[in-house]
Length: 446
Image 1: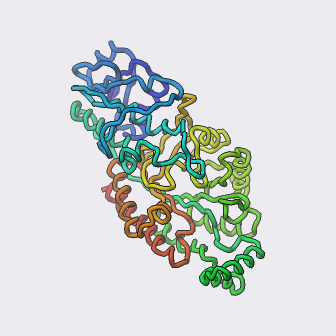
Image 2: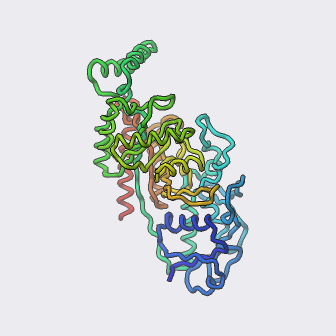
Image 3: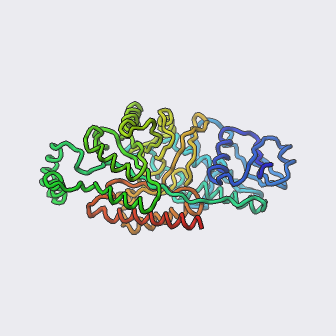
Protein backbone atom coordinates (compact mmCIF):
# COMPACT_ATOMS: atom_id res chain seq x y z
CA UNK A 1 0.00 0.00 0.00
CA UNK A 2 1.43 3.42 -0.94
CA UNK A 3 2.22 6.03 1.71
CA UNK A 4 0.72 8.75 -0.48
CA UNK A 5 -1.84 8.77 -3.29
CA UNK A 6 -1.49 11.54 -5.87
CA UNK A 7 -4.38 12.27 -8.21
CA UNK A 8 -3.65 13.96 -11.55
CA UNK A 9 -6.29 14.24 -14.27
CA UNK A 10 -3.71 13.90 -17.05
CA UNK A 11 -0.35 12.21 -16.53
CA UNK A 12 1.69 14.08 -19.13
CA UNK A 13 5.50 13.68 -19.52
CA UNK A 14 5.96 16.96 -17.62
CA UNK A 15 3.70 15.87 -14.78
CA UNK A 16 5.54 12.53 -14.46
CA UNK A 17 8.94 14.24 -14.60
CA UNK A 18 8.08 16.95 -12.09
CA UNK A 19 6.64 14.66 -9.44
CA UNK A 20 9.60 12.32 -9.83
CA UNK A 21 11.85 15.34 -9.36
CA UNK A 22 9.94 16.37 -6.23
CA UNK A 23 9.55 13.00 -4.53
CA UNK A 24 12.69 11.17 -5.69
CA UNK A 25 15.40 13.81 -6.14
CA UNK A 26 14.34 16.48 -3.64
CA UNK A 27 12.46 14.49 -0.96
CA UNK A 28 14.75 11.49 -1.54
CA UNK A 29 12.01 8.83 -1.72
CA UNK A 30 10.76 9.69 1.77
CA UNK A 31 7.37 8.26 0.81
CA UNK A 32 6.09 5.60 -1.56
CA UNK A 33 3.89 7.54 -3.98
CA UNK A 34 1.18 6.24 -6.30
CA UNK A 35 0.13 8.55 -9.13
CA UNK A 36 -3.29 7.81 -10.60
CA UNK A 37 -5.87 9.44 -12.86
CA UNK A 38 -8.99 7.73 -11.52
CA UNK A 39 -11.03 10.10 -9.35
CA UNK A 40 -13.10 7.17 -8.04
CA UNK A 41 -10.03 5.24 -6.86
CA UNK A 42 -8.55 8.40 -5.40
CA UNK A 43 -11.65 9.17 -3.35
CA UNK A 44 -11.80 5.56 -2.13
CA UNK A 45 -8.20 5.59 -0.90
CA UNK A 46 -8.00 5.87 2.88
CA UNK A 47 -4.74 7.53 3.75
CA UNK A 48 -2.59 10.59 2.89
CA UNK A 49 -3.44 11.92 -0.56
CA UNK A 50 -3.07 14.94 -2.81
CA UNK A 51 -5.41 16.19 -5.50
CA UNK A 52 -3.50 17.99 -8.26
CA UNK A 53 -6.37 19.09 -10.44
CA UNK A 54 -9.22 21.57 -10.69
CA UNK A 55 -10.95 20.40 -7.55
CA UNK A 56 -10.19 18.95 -4.16
CA UNK A 57 -11.96 16.79 -1.62
CA UNK A 58 -12.37 17.10 2.11
CA UNK A 59 -9.91 14.38 3.15
CA UNK A 60 -7.10 15.29 0.70
CA UNK A 61 -4.59 18.07 0.29
CA UNK A 62 -5.30 20.25 -2.73
CA UNK A 63 -2.67 21.67 -5.11
CA UNK A 64 -4.12 23.89 -7.85
CA UNK A 65 -3.37 22.76 -11.40
CA UNK A 66 -3.31 25.67 -13.86
CA UNK A 67 -2.64 23.39 -16.83
CA UNK A 68 0.96 24.40 -17.59
CA UNK A 69 2.31 20.86 -17.05
CA UNK A 70 -0.28 19.44 -19.44
CA UNK A 71 1.19 21.43 -22.33
CA UNK A 72 3.82 20.16 -24.74
CA UNK A 73 6.59 21.97 -26.57
CA UNK A 74 7.74 25.51 -25.92
CA UNK A 75 5.79 28.76 -26.15
CA UNK A 76 6.98 32.26 -25.36
CA UNK A 77 5.58 32.68 -21.88
CA UNK A 78 6.42 34.22 -18.51
CA UNK A 79 4.37 33.12 -15.50
CA UNK A 80 2.85 35.49 -12.98
CA UNK A 81 5.12 36.10 -9.98
CA UNK A 82 4.13 37.06 -6.45
CA UNK A 83 6.41 37.97 -3.54
CA UNK A 84 10.15 38.42 -3.30
CA UNK A 85 13.15 36.34 -2.25
CA UNK A 86 12.34 33.08 -0.48
CA UNK A 87 8.69 34.25 -0.21
CA UNK A 88 8.39 34.41 -4.00
CA UNK A 89 6.05 32.01 -5.84
CA UNK A 90 5.22 31.45 -9.50
CA UNK A 91 1.75 30.62 -10.88
CA UNK A 92 -0.11 32.07 -7.86
CA UNK A 93 -3.89 31.87 -7.40
CA UNK A 94 -6.40 33.21 -4.91
CA UNK A 95 -7.78 30.32 -2.87
CA UNK A 96 -8.95 29.40 0.61
CA UNK A 97 -7.85 25.76 0.42
CA UNK A 98 -4.54 23.95 -0.06
CA UNK A 99 -1.56 25.75 -1.56
CA UNK A 100 -1.98 29.19 -3.09
CA UNK A 101 0.14 28.50 -6.19
CA UNK A 102 0.71 25.75 -8.77
CA UNK A 103 3.79 24.37 -7.05
CA UNK A 104 4.63 21.59 -9.56
CA UNK A 105 4.41 24.08 -12.46
CA UNK A 106 6.68 26.49 -10.60
CA UNK A 107 9.22 23.74 -9.89
CA UNK A 108 9.22 22.61 -13.51
CA UNK A 109 9.59 26.15 -14.84
CA UNK A 110 12.71 26.99 -12.83
CA UNK A 111 14.42 23.58 -12.97
CA UNK A 112 13.87 22.98 -16.70
CA UNK A 113 15.22 26.51 -17.39
CA UNK A 114 12.12 27.13 -19.52
CA UNK A 115 12.90 30.84 -19.71
CA UNK A 116 16.21 30.15 -21.49
CA UNK A 117 14.63 28.44 -24.48
CA UNK A 118 13.88 31.78 -26.12
CA UNK A 119 16.80 33.96 -25.21
CA UNK A 120 16.52 37.25 -27.09
CA UNK A 121 19.47 38.99 -25.45
CA UNK A 122 22.87 37.41 -24.81
CA UNK A 123 26.13 38.68 -23.36
CA UNK A 124 29.47 39.15 -25.12
CA UNK A 125 30.14 35.39 -24.99
CA UNK A 126 26.72 34.46 -26.41
CA UNK A 127 25.34 33.36 -23.03
CA UNK A 128 22.02 33.86 -21.29
CA UNK A 129 22.39 36.85 -18.98
CA UNK A 130 21.82 36.28 -15.28
CA UNK A 131 20.07 39.64 -14.91
CA UNK A 132 17.39 38.50 -17.39
CA UNK A 133 16.31 35.59 -15.18
CA UNK A 134 13.21 35.68 -12.98
CA UNK A 135 15.40 34.57 -10.07
CA UNK A 136 17.59 37.67 -10.39
CA UNK A 137 14.70 40.06 -10.94
CA UNK A 138 12.65 38.74 -8.02
CA UNK A 139 15.42 38.13 -5.53
CA UNK A 140 15.39 34.36 -5.18
CA UNK A 141 18.61 33.52 -7.02
CA UNK A 142 20.45 32.95 -3.75
CA UNK A 143 17.79 30.49 -2.54
CA UNK A 144 17.28 26.90 -3.75
CA UNK A 145 13.75 28.10 -4.38
CA UNK A 146 12.28 24.85 -5.71
CA UNK A 147 13.37 23.15 -2.49
CA UNK A 148 11.90 26.00 -0.44
CA UNK A 149 8.56 25.33 -2.17
CA UNK A 150 8.82 21.56 -1.73
CA UNK A 151 9.60 21.96 1.96
CA UNK A 152 6.41 24.00 2.26
CA UNK A 153 4.56 21.14 0.56
CA UNK A 154 6.10 18.53 2.86
CA UNK A 155 5.28 20.59 5.96
CA UNK A 156 1.64 21.03 4.88
CA UNK A 157 1.32 17.32 4.11
CA UNK A 158 2.73 16.20 7.44
CA UNK A 159 0.54 18.72 9.26
CA UNK A 160 -2.53 17.22 7.61
CA UNK A 161 -1.28 13.62 7.69
CA UNK A 162 0.98 13.14 10.76
CA UNK A 163 1.55 9.45 9.94
CA UNK A 164 3.83 10.44 7.03
CA UNK A 165 7.53 10.02 7.85
CA UNK A 166 9.67 13.13 8.11
CA UNK A 167 11.75 13.52 4.90
CA UNK A 168 15.45 13.05 5.51
CA UNK A 169 17.84 15.84 4.57
CA UNK A 170 21.46 15.23 3.70
CA UNK A 171 24.30 17.64 3.06
CA UNK A 172 26.85 16.64 0.44
CA UNK A 173 29.77 18.58 -0.97
CA UNK A 174 31.73 18.52 -4.21
CA UNK A 175 34.73 20.71 -4.97
CA UNK A 176 35.29 21.23 -8.68
CA UNK A 177 38.30 22.89 -10.29
CA UNK A 178 38.58 24.26 -13.83
CA UNK A 179 42.13 24.06 -15.16
CA UNK A 180 42.14 26.92 -17.67
CA UNK A 181 45.94 27.24 -17.73
CA UNK A 182 47.72 24.39 -16.01
CA UNK A 183 50.94 26.40 -15.91
CA UNK A 184 51.46 30.11 -16.34
CA UNK A 185 54.66 29.97 -18.40
CA UNK A 186 55.51 26.30 -18.84
CA UNK A 187 54.00 24.43 -21.74
CA UNK A 188 54.54 27.33 -24.13
CA UNK A 189 57.12 27.49 -26.95
CA UNK A 190 60.44 29.08 -25.97
CA UNK A 191 59.98 31.91 -28.47
CA UNK A 192 56.69 32.85 -26.83
CA UNK A 193 58.22 33.00 -23.37
CA UNK A 194 61.19 35.01 -24.64
CA UNK A 195 58.84 37.37 -26.46
CA UNK A 196 56.75 37.64 -23.31
CA UNK A 197 59.87 38.44 -21.29
CA UNK A 198 60.65 41.35 -23.60
CA UNK A 199 57.05 42.63 -23.56
CA UNK A 200 56.86 42.41 -19.77
CA UNK A 201 60.05 44.47 -19.58
CA UNK A 202 58.71 47.11 -21.95
CA UNK A 203 55.56 47.36 -19.82
CA UNK A 204 57.66 47.67 -16.64
CA UNK A 205 56.05 44.52 -15.16
CA UNK A 206 58.93 43.62 -12.88
CA UNK A 207 57.24 40.72 -11.13
CA UNK A 208 56.36 39.04 -14.43
CA UNK A 209 59.91 39.53 -15.67
CA UNK A 210 61.33 37.89 -12.53
CA UNK A 211 58.93 34.94 -12.77
CA UNK A 212 59.70 34.28 -16.42
CA UNK A 213 63.45 34.77 -16.03
CA UNK A 214 63.79 32.48 -13.00
CA UNK A 215 61.66 29.82 -14.72
CA UNK A 216 63.57 29.95 -18.01
CA UNK A 217 67.12 30.32 -16.73
CA UNK A 218 67.22 29.33 -13.04
CA UNK A 219 64.93 26.29 -12.91
CA UNK A 220 62.37 27.81 -10.54
CA UNK A 221 58.85 26.41 -10.30
CA UNK A 222 56.06 27.84 -12.42
CA UNK A 223 53.80 30.21 -10.37
CA UNK A 224 50.72 28.06 -11.11
CA UNK A 225 52.50 24.83 -10.19
CA UNK A 226 51.14 24.72 -6.66
CA UNK A 227 49.50 21.32 -7.06
CA UNK A 228 51.40 19.74 -4.18
CA UNK A 229 49.79 22.28 -1.84
CA UNK A 230 46.38 21.61 -3.39
CA UNK A 231 46.84 17.87 -3.00
CA UNK A 232 47.55 18.34 0.72
CA UNK A 233 44.34 20.31 1.26
CA UNK A 234 42.24 17.72 -0.54
CA UNK A 235 43.90 14.80 1.21
CA UNK A 236 43.39 16.44 4.61
CA UNK A 237 39.70 17.09 3.99
CA UNK A 238 38.93 13.72 2.34
CA UNK A 239 36.23 15.53 0.35
CA UNK A 240 35.53 14.62 -3.30
CA UNK A 241 37.13 16.72 -6.04
CA UNK A 242 36.47 16.73 -9.77
CA UNK A 243 38.85 18.55 -12.10
CA UNK A 244 37.88 19.80 -15.56
CA UNK A 245 40.78 20.23 -17.96
CA UNK A 246 41.08 21.71 -21.45
CA UNK A 247 42.35 19.45 -24.22
CA UNK A 248 42.87 21.85 -27.09
CA UNK A 249 45.33 24.00 -28.97
CA UNK A 250 45.73 27.66 -28.05
CA UNK A 251 42.88 29.99 -28.94
CA UNK A 252 41.75 33.50 -28.05
CA UNK A 253 40.07 32.23 -24.87
CA UNK A 254 41.92 28.92 -24.48
CA UNK A 255 45.30 29.27 -22.76
CA UNK A 256 45.98 25.84 -21.28
CA UNK A 257 49.05 23.71 -21.96
CA UNK A 258 48.54 22.11 -25.36
CA UNK A 259 48.06 18.32 -25.44
CA UNK A 260 51.07 17.82 -27.72
CA UNK A 261 53.50 19.49 -25.32
CA UNK A 262 55.62 17.32 -23.04
CA UNK A 263 54.46 19.33 -20.00
CA UNK A 264 50.85 18.25 -20.61
CA UNK A 265 51.53 14.68 -19.53
CA UNK A 266 53.18 15.91 -16.34
CA UNK A 267 50.20 18.17 -15.67
CA UNK A 268 47.76 15.27 -16.04
CA UNK A 269 49.82 13.16 -13.63
CA UNK A 270 49.79 15.94 -11.03
CA UNK A 271 46.04 16.46 -11.36
CA UNK A 272 45.23 12.74 -11.20
CA UNK A 273 46.68 12.67 -7.69
CA UNK A 274 44.22 15.37 -6.58
CA UNK A 275 40.85 14.38 -8.02
CA UNK A 276 38.90 12.74 -10.83
CA UNK A 277 39.53 14.26 -14.26
CA UNK A 278 36.89 15.35 -16.76
CA UNK A 279 36.67 17.42 -19.94
CA UNK A 280 36.53 21.22 -20.10
CA UNK A 281 35.64 21.75 -23.78
CA UNK A 282 37.29 24.67 -25.54
CA UNK A 283 35.52 27.97 -26.09
CA UNK A 284 34.49 27.29 -29.69
CA UNK A 285 32.91 23.89 -28.99
CA UNK A 286 29.55 25.58 -28.46
CA UNK A 287 29.40 26.20 -32.22
CA UNK A 288 31.46 23.21 -33.36
CA UNK A 289 30.17 19.80 -32.16
CA UNK A 290 32.79 18.02 -34.24
CA UNK A 291 35.54 19.69 -32.24
CA UNK A 292 33.89 18.61 -29.00
CA UNK A 293 33.96 14.99 -30.17
CA UNK A 294 37.67 15.23 -31.03
CA UNK A 295 38.54 16.79 -27.67
CA UNK A 296 36.58 14.13 -25.82
CA UNK A 297 38.31 11.35 -27.72
CA UNK A 298 41.71 13.00 -27.29
CA UNK A 299 41.46 13.29 -23.52
CA UNK A 300 40.13 9.75 -23.23
CA UNK A 301 43.18 8.54 -25.13
CA UNK A 302 45.58 10.54 -22.94
CA UNK A 303 43.96 9.16 -19.81
CA UNK A 304 43.69 5.65 -21.31
CA UNK A 305 39.97 5.53 -20.63
CA UNK A 306 37.18 3.93 -22.57
CA UNK A 307 34.66 6.60 -21.62
CA UNK A 308 34.52 10.24 -20.55
CA UNK A 309 31.23 10.90 -18.75
CA UNK A 310 31.59 14.32 -17.06
CA UNK A 311 31.80 17.71 -18.76
CA UNK A 312 31.76 21.43 -17.94
CA UNK A 313 31.79 24.01 -20.71
CA UNK A 314 34.60 26.57 -20.82
CA UNK A 315 33.19 30.03 -19.98
CA UNK A 316 29.94 28.18 -19.13
CA UNK A 317 28.85 28.60 -22.75
CA UNK A 318 25.57 26.69 -22.89
CA UNK A 319 22.34 27.03 -24.84
CA UNK A 320 19.10 25.26 -23.95
CA UNK A 321 18.43 22.65 -25.23
CA UNK A 322 21.10 22.20 -27.94
CA UNK A 323 24.17 22.06 -25.68
CA UNK A 324 22.63 19.33 -23.56
CA UNK A 325 21.42 17.27 -26.50
CA UNK A 326 24.90 17.57 -27.97
CA UNK A 327 26.86 16.26 -25.00
CA UNK A 328 24.36 13.48 -24.36
CA UNK A 329 24.46 12.27 -27.95
CA UNK A 330 28.25 11.92 -27.93
CA UNK A 331 28.33 9.95 -24.69
CA UNK A 332 28.49 12.34 -21.73
CA UNK A 333 26.17 11.48 -18.84
CA UNK A 334 26.96 14.26 -16.35
CA UNK A 335 26.81 18.01 -17.09
CA UNK A 336 28.30 20.58 -14.67
CA UNK A 337 27.76 23.91 -16.48
CA UNK A 338 24.51 25.10 -14.89
CA UNK A 339 25.46 28.18 -12.90
CA UNK A 340 26.39 31.77 -13.69
CA UNK A 341 29.81 33.27 -14.32
CA UNK A 342 28.99 36.73 -12.92
CA UNK A 343 26.72 36.12 -9.91
CA UNK A 344 26.33 33.53 -7.17
CA UNK A 345 23.25 31.43 -6.67
CA UNK A 346 21.06 28.60 -7.86
CA UNK A 347 20.49 29.02 -11.59
CA UNK A 348 18.14 26.03 -11.70
CA UNK A 349 16.55 26.71 -8.31
CA UNK A 350 17.89 23.53 -6.69
CA UNK A 351 20.98 22.18 -4.95
CA UNK A 352 20.35 18.59 -6.04
CA UNK A 353 21.41 16.77 -9.19
CA UNK A 354 18.56 15.97 -11.56
CA UNK A 355 17.90 14.57 -15.05
CA UNK A 356 17.74 17.02 -17.93
CA UNK A 357 14.29 17.64 -19.42
CA UNK A 358 14.10 18.77 -23.05
CA UNK A 359 11.18 21.20 -23.18
CA UNK A 360 10.98 21.24 -26.98
CA UNK A 361 10.91 17.45 -27.27
CA UNK A 362 8.84 17.09 -24.10
CA UNK A 363 11.05 14.29 -22.85
CA UNK A 364 13.34 13.49 -19.96
CA UNK A 365 16.94 12.39 -20.53
CA UNK A 366 19.51 10.19 -18.80
CA UNK A 367 21.87 13.19 -18.77
CA UNK A 368 22.28 14.30 -15.15
CA UNK A 369 22.65 18.01 -14.40
CA UNK A 370 24.91 18.95 -11.47
CA UNK A 371 24.27 22.66 -10.75
CA UNK A 372 26.81 24.73 -8.83
CA UNK A 373 26.15 27.81 -6.71
CA UNK A 374 29.53 29.44 -6.02
CA UNK A 375 32.46 30.31 -8.30
CA UNK A 376 35.43 32.17 -6.85
CA UNK A 377 35.98 34.31 -9.94
CA UNK A 378 32.64 36.01 -9.24
CA UNK A 379 34.22 37.41 -6.08
CA UNK A 380 37.57 38.24 -7.66
CA UNK A 381 36.56 39.79 -10.98
CA UNK A 382 32.89 40.79 -10.79
CA UNK A 383 32.13 41.73 -7.18
CA UNK A 384 35.79 42.58 -6.47
CA UNK A 385 35.38 41.89 -2.77
CA UNK A 386 37.86 40.64 -0.17
CA UNK A 387 38.37 36.95 0.54
CA UNK A 388 36.77 37.54 3.96
CA UNK A 389 33.58 38.88 2.39
CA UNK A 390 33.68 36.01 -0.14
CA UNK A 391 33.76 33.52 2.73
CA UNK A 392 30.74 35.19 4.36
CA UNK A 393 28.71 34.86 1.16
CA UNK A 394 29.93 31.30 0.56
CA UNK A 395 28.97 30.31 4.10
CA UNK A 396 25.49 31.77 3.65
CA UNK A 397 24.80 29.67 0.55
CA UNK A 398 26.44 26.58 1.98
CA UNK A 399 24.29 26.76 5.10
CA UNK A 400 21.19 27.15 2.95
CA UNK A 401 22.09 23.96 1.13
CA UNK A 402 22.52 22.27 4.52
CA UNK A 403 19.14 23.66 5.59
CA UNK A 404 17.20 22.39 2.58
CA UNK A 405 19.35 19.38 1.72
CA UNK A 406 21.34 18.56 -1.36
CA UNK A 407 24.89 18.99 -2.55
CA UNK A 408 26.91 22.18 -2.44
CA UNK A 409 29.11 22.40 -5.53
CA UNK A 410 31.78 25.08 -5.79
CA UNK A 411 33.92 26.03 -8.79
CA UNK A 412 37.53 27.15 -8.50
CA UNK A 413 40.24 27.90 -11.05
CA UNK A 414 43.88 26.87 -11.07
CA UNK A 415 45.14 30.48 -10.99
CA UNK A 416 43.52 30.98 -7.57
CA UNK A 417 45.99 28.48 -6.09
CA UNK A 418 48.97 30.30 -7.59
CA UNK A 419 52.20 30.99 -5.67
CA UNK A 420 51.71 34.66 -6.53
CA UNK A 421 50.95 37.03 -3.65
CA UNK A 422 47.58 38.18 -5.01
CA UNK A 423 46.30 34.58 -5.05
CA UNK A 424 47.17 33.74 -1.43
CA UNK A 425 43.92 35.04 0.14
CA UNK A 426 41.92 32.97 -2.34
CA UNK A 427 43.92 29.83 -1.68
CA UNK A 428 43.24 30.38 2.02
CA UNK A 429 39.55 30.86 1.22
CA UNK A 430 39.58 27.50 -0.56
CA UNK A 431 40.99 25.82 2.53
CA UNK A 432 38.41 27.57 4.74
CA UNK A 433 35.46 26.51 2.62
CA UNK A 434 36.65 22.88 2.72
CA UNK A 435 36.75 23.12 6.52
CA UNK A 436 33.24 24.58 6.60
CA UNK A 437 31.97 21.75 4.39
CA UNK A 438 33.44 19.20 6.81
CA UNK A 439 31.79 21.00 9.73
CA UNK A 440 28.37 20.99 8.03
CA UNK A 441 28.67 17.33 7.04
CA UNK A 442 29.48 16.48 10.64
CA UNK A 443 26.48 18.49 11.90
CA UNK A 444 24.25 16.74 9.38
CA UNK A 445 25.32 13.32 10.63
CA UNK A 446 24.73 14.41 14.21
